[in-house]
Length: 181
Image (cartoon, rainbow, N blue to C red):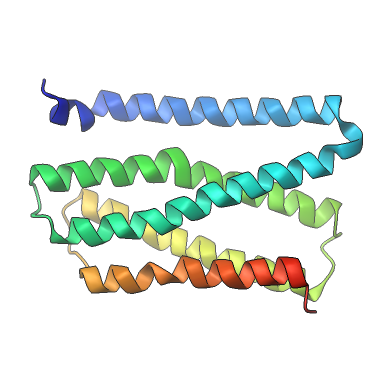
């Protein structure tokens, strides 16, 4: 088996999934240890971990459409296309999905614990995060479409879609920092 075949093998994908599950389990264990070890500053730890998860989620949301741009130009079934498929699937399963889940869980915990779900800015932020999750779902579907060598959108489409997470992120950060209403 050459290195190209090894990169796209099913066993490599299973190992990546196991690593993602292990990472989530370790993350939950860290949360529990922090709750016991640092109860007075637990919400600060949650905020810090929430920011780390959001940064990871956003990095994946920025990178995945770039992969789609290049993948759109690759011939279906080619070695290049198969490599993009594996890269997209691993980015989605190992980074993007866990980071989104952690962002949501910790974010909702903070909305409840720190803010009591109060504030117009918080409701607007949650609405924008729902839209960001919609972008995530759209990208997830595209990963499946590319994986099945289904109909492809143009590189121009993916260049435009690459801006959606950026615009939503800017609005979300402004709401969180400025709290305009």
